[in-house]
Image 1 (cartoon, rainbow, N blue to C red):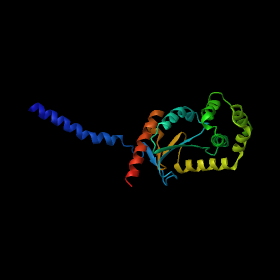
Image 2 (cartoon, helix red, strand yellow):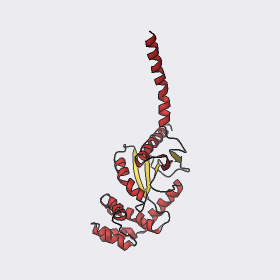
Image 3 (cartoon, rainbow, N blue to C red):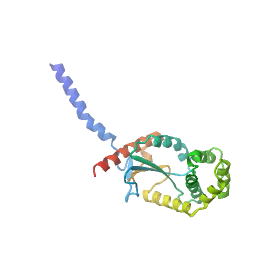
Length: 214
């Protein structure tokens, strides 16, 4: 009987500990994420994750294969979107236009990783629009369509809009992840890129719960 009471008491303690474990898994404002106020515009029917990045950033280059694999496995209620930023640097603004031009011509999926490789491994210098067009054409993109896309006013507007969102989210560098327009993941809370994505998963869960509570 004494042994049975001891076992029951141990089981009770284990049960009481479970809420504490669940609480520990909850992302904390100011630690794992920072509130974005006012929130960014976001899609209403899905939880949107935005990756602010630049092709010119070596950390973004390292992060790219990991976040791409992670994004491919996101649940159906989560939408992933990438936003290239310039931080008002003309050379990074050109890189942002490369992203949008590739997206416009339908070459993004094929040449996205190639841009990172060109910059960070092959040391290709994209110091002019002409150099970019020559590179893209050499990779099989339609020269005229790509050149027109790079030079279009729409590209300039998209770059400006991306920089405005980055400023509104108060990002301090890239890569940076924002969830549901309301939460900016704190990179300093992560011990690795994998841990950064783990934290993002917990904030996605928080955003999902917040939506259910409305």
